[in-house]
Length: 139
Picture 1: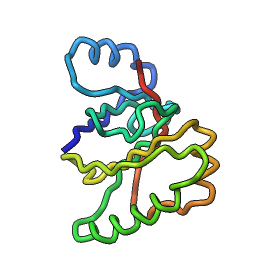
Picture 2: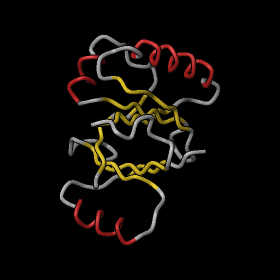
Picture 3: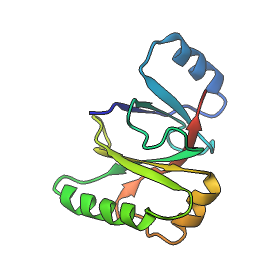
């Protein structure tokens, strides 16, 4: 299983969070949401969790999938992934299964935020509650 942690960090507290992050030794890459209003402003993903680490940005989307709906979710996820394949700027997707409140987290790599927005205008969102945000490595 690939580790992923999602962090709720209030706007204005980035410096404190990043300082604490740097003090700990972790085998994960830290990502920061491009928008301050993202529910999870930071995400840490273990090795192999991001489909293309050379990407400009990654859509990280935690999904709340009700018990008994896994098969329906997985079918919808695969259909959406197939619809994105071949779109300009799409660099790959991976579905993670973390422990915690969200049983599935989708990670999709994009060449740029613009390519993400263009492609997703034409692809229907999944019919499950989610908290999507675009992220870039926090450095």
